[in-house]
Image (cartoon, rainbow over all chains, first blue to last red; front, side, top):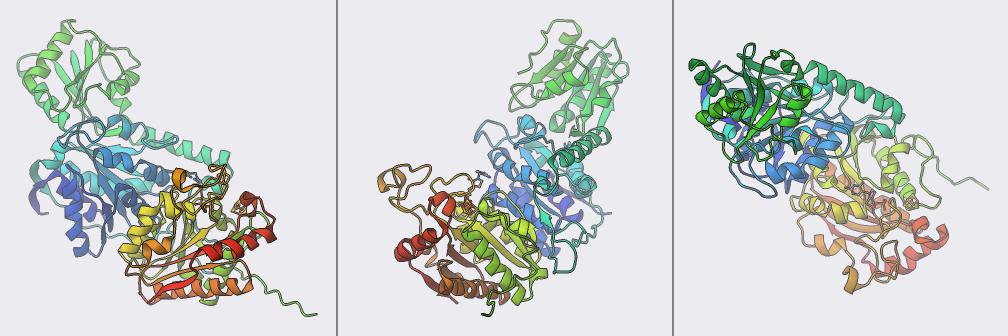
Length: 358
Length: 243
Ligand SMILES: Cc1ncc(C[n+]2csc(CCOP(=O)(O)OP(=O)(O)O)c2C)c(N)n1
Ligand code: SF4
């Protein structure tokens, strides 16, 4: 297999293409534009379709249609553009359309800034659009993972007939690392569920919409909630380092998890017992990882690039508030390792007040 | 006396759910006949809007996808790009196509996408209870213009011909369902618009003036008269682009 040094965003785009993506629509926004730019020439090379939509709203709905007709289709955005996609994504969910969206997080409210951030967490994992849903949410922390997650995303979405979100961030998206390229997957878009035209006498015509229009709503609800429960149980993924004997456990995803892991390594050398849980799926949240925490653990600290410590509430739920929980939320920058270690030391010494959940 | 009523084509699989005298049902029947006569039902995927117009889904046996309200211009674009051998057609509301989805409608036209839009102009938002749409006429009373539409408060009404007249598209026409002669013209325009797509000529849009007796507060016969006496006089009718 070939190895290339490329940007996280390019790896994400290439991973999707090799995973069978043959339709991409998007709209320029920093720091995700490399995905769109890569797709603009790459789709042509592989016989797929690239459309630069007139807006994120148009793009997300183009993906709905392309996917409803069977093609593996995706879109991507950041910040305000990701907000505009939410209505469309809710339609993917209710119609069971297994499309993929990537959000390369930037920091800020409204237009915000073009630099990296992790403050789309709530929007990404708590719904985003209207109605009872979460997207299956994958959080890469390396260029290789950008590629691997995009490569796998369509099969994951098709397994559940439910959309997948890849929640990256501006740093992971922009940095360059060596990346191993897997083989191109073949995909037949003439899936049994896809709309491709039904002649009279050929069987029942397909209507790709909220199933509730054509089915008893209670029956539809029951099937849907059972599916969501199953995803919640079966798809939790995480990585853990040194948690068995840890006095303080860090929890971080994406770029923050890289700093957290380094902090654990440095602290351990100094005899400070830190551990790390890195959620790989943000929904379903890897609650199972938290079952292993030893009862002498003095605290759990989330490391996040936002102001409010958005992930803290999920940690508290995961441990049923049995451990003191803190957020080291450092807005638009990731805290450096010495700051992380110093903060954890203070937690160990009982010198920090528990962080409030907003 | 011979019975001259035509049997409905098989694509009309059951009774429709529209109000008595609703123009949408007349249009659906016309479209059903054209798809049947062109023998392309199995090659057609209709993109639905959301509105009363979307109730064609219940009575027509054709593949359908339903994106959010108004976003048909975007969805049709993708439909045609991923399955160029299939017909990408929409039945749209005037609220959907000209208000919430205006950007998508015009963007698809400016790109001259090889798709076909049929827009049902009933001069209001029917499904939500008869509020004003871009097509609500000056002076017209609606649920959200209780004293009548005025230029000062609501702006001028929308005419798609003014927006698309100079675009490089394949076909643009306006017809109605007000009388047998108009129904014939509508059927002809529907067929022509789909033929443009078949021949890869590009974007086509047919606006059809349809009655909504329920929200107009008129009997079905009087609703048809309103179209003949008011709307067909106010609007330029017929084909204005035919390439
Ligand atoms: C985003 C969004 N806004 C509003 C609605 C509510 N809504 C449903 S149908 C409709 C109006 C439809 O009017 P029109 O497009 O003219 O079609 P008609 O009902 O007249 O056939 C509206 C506003 C919606 N479904 N989605
Ligand atoms: S409310 Fe108007 S548009 Fe809707 S079904 Fe009734 S007549 Fe037709």
